[in-house]
Length: 315
Image (tube, rainbow, N blue to C red; front, side, top):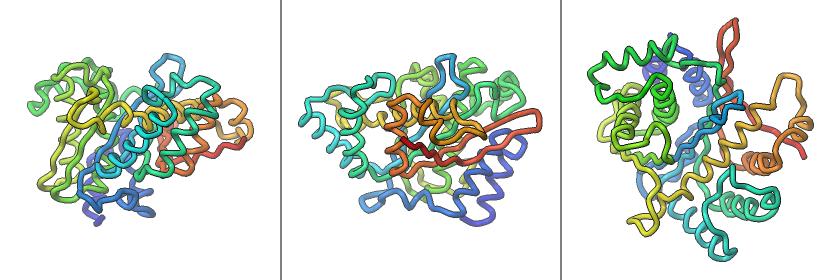
């Protein structure tokens, strides 16, 4: 990336809390290439799924997780997951909230064994304190007022709180994609049914935000093709975009949220292990073998910062 690209990103967000996340991701990008974790040997179509944790009212953080891969590698990984289900008699998709203690050594481990061998992509996760009201404006009401004034977003029907969530979910992946996309690339985003995509009108608005952010963050892109969906139903044209596609984001989001609610400056890895839920421990042990970029945003009376964290757990 050239200096103009970095300057544009910083300029877009320098007066906002989101700017701290931008700065942290830029720092990461100067030592690694996000694109190098993707396999473009078949075509230039990127797919990503999204999931969110921490909305149960007891968490200290909202955790937003995105899984990136290319369409061809998604097909290969999903084929192996289907074979696992058939061989072992497993039903349904992997889901953090549905994991029972005994599955730590069974279904969950089998699922990760297959994933580690066949998944080619990376995980991107951002944890935001629930006390942080808006990343993009002084308050969520201010953001809402500004959006309603903008003719580009005249289809907005969200209340201020849901609008902030929609902005986060559109902005986080846009930031990562801006480092990867080139002309004539394609992007497919899939999310589970949620408050930001309850109906076609809300899905269209959040999709518009994603497109707007990508164009702002990478203004020289041409020929970009964007598509959006909820999970396909069984027997649909392509079952690769089923709930299985969401499962890795779901598992990571739940485990990282559990981890962020425990960590502090003076806690040891051994103590974290004692406090982690067993299913989170198992997931995070595997996460260290999957490329993962996890960012923790923090805010206090002295200001705010965002840092990339490397999760280490010891059993």
